[in-house]
Image (cartoon, rainbow, N blue to C red; front, side, top):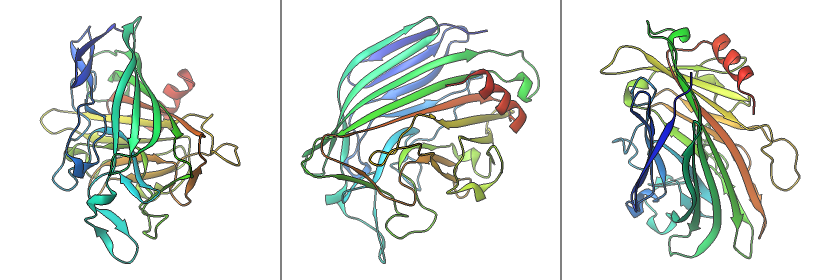
Length: 318
């Protein structure tokens, strides 16, 4: 059974989407500017389950620039729109504030909720550290498929769920190509993070990682249509599962064709997932061209197993 959604907009600060049946604030989308060193950009935090448990982290002491769920660009033509220190091959991470850029909110095209779906459609400007305009982004965040389940023990069958779809279309406004990369494209192994990035709460450290055909942190750098992360809460009994998907239509710009994500995933020393679009190889975006990506994140109460995940995804196709 799906419940209605309500939007509350604190102008200049955040948009909160509330599931009215349980009165749960499922997300806050924060777009106010924050510290320059952290590569300011809008983000989703907190992210909550229908049982009102938080499944995201904000400014953890190990990486202050990790903020819930956010679009990032760790290496972008020499700039760092990820935040914090910048990876330099042979020198590890270096404090290079002149490389830390930003993604600035410029306006909303739609903020609405009706018929069990909420929409936040936003325009952003991607900027060099000196403020130079490098790219425009059209972003659309949708909440949908809110499904309650019966009360009971922490099992897959008892957990309710809801889904967030994130769409980004990034257009290069420079007169030269934009080159999207990652620490791995710059020489660091198993650090291909860039693009949409989720940081899990501290309690999710050591959580369970599942893919369609494998399990565990060994899925780092692999390709698959989905990846799931389950963790156990502090302060409340039970678990939650987040299922990350990339859309089948996500295209690699340039010499096209399907470009399945390479998964960046860790459960130690912290919980994190990113469907990286530049894990092993740089992605080049020509002047005037647009990079379009769509992702889904399903937030579920309970420790869902592979069978339950597959059943859910079959019932909720793209």
